[in-house]
Image (cartoon, rainbow, N blue to C red; front, side, top):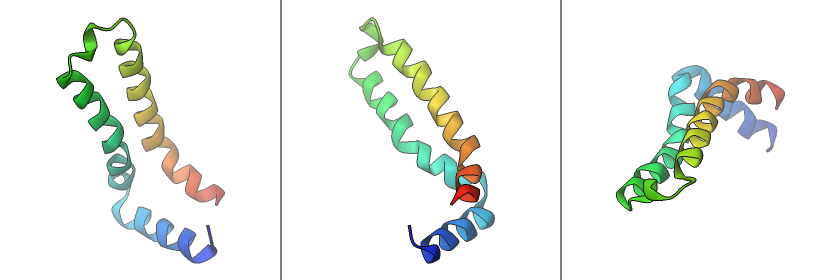
Length: 71
């Protein structure tokens, strides 16, 4: 990323806060809803994927501001 892009993302995060990270997690959560609609929970490892995906979504929300500081 060039410095201008990093600054734009930083300003966006400072303006909207955690809502930006939550929006970034929406596609991941949408995948789980779609899997539920297809009855994927009957598969043996779907619950493991669901739990790991939820943990990943939480990590994304928590780590987003720290990632900006590293840029």
